[in-house]
Length: 326
Ligand code: 13P
Ligand code: SF4
Image 1 (cartoon, protein in one colour):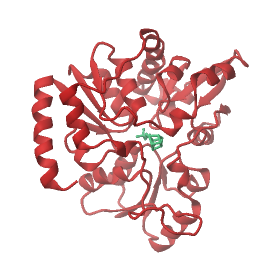
Image 2 (image 1 turned 120 degrees about the horizontal axis):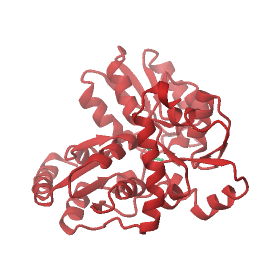
Image 3 (image 1 turned 135 degrees about the vertical axis):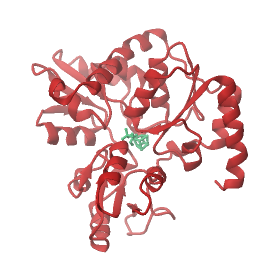
Image 4 (image 1 turned 120 degrees about the vertical axis):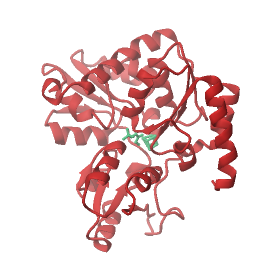
């Protein structure tokens, strides 16, 4: 969005924020102008931690629906609004709660580990929640006598199996955006920029993860690029993250992995991947949801009560030093 258009909207948002005693939380994939008005920008883990500790009365959640739901579960008495209630997630869609319950019924010894990219109803059926930032640590801490069931991302699940050696039954879900990245594209970029480090999100396919210098959550990607002496990086995830990388790593160069179709043509003009759900949010919609206090997140009390437990378990294990968690 052009600066001249963003600035007056940003001023309105700051005024509303004070009036409402609101906090604006934004995911790393949000458009730059939303990131720039947020109090906190981060990955799903950081956002859950912020939601768990905020003193604000209103939470404006700029991400996708399941993230705002998580904030509501942690703050049942607060108002949680989101810019667009239809901002979903293909992973969430892939795992309906009734189908999960059916699978769980086949093995009473299942210990259900749910990636945070799922509905509140699925969280309510789970033993513990993970994000891409803590999945490995939490799986290492899972009870040894249980059969682990990991839902809904088969790619993140497979990566965690590779890291921990713990066998798990994997739900067959995936992120429609991350599975578009292919080995050939990354190999081509690597040949073109041999000095670049390749940084991949674990929702990607194994053929792509295997080429990576680092596989990690969006927040850890930013840390990796800051800490690395390298000057150039191929970033294999949603393009929104480049904004923070450019801001926090001045002078370094970030190449967004392109997505090609079967004819080897880039599928979009910017040659980078975009999550259509994350990009449903706009600065206007942020202003509007604060003005109207709608769309507002509401959940049944019973779901909140049951879903809160596995989220709190995740936050607790995440906060432990590695040696106590494993
Ligand atoms: P992070 O938790 O790594 O930010 O990932 C969230 C997500 O939806 C990735 O597609
Ligand atoms: Fe869901 Fe994929 Fe979008 Fe992340 S990038 S919110 S996993 S659809």
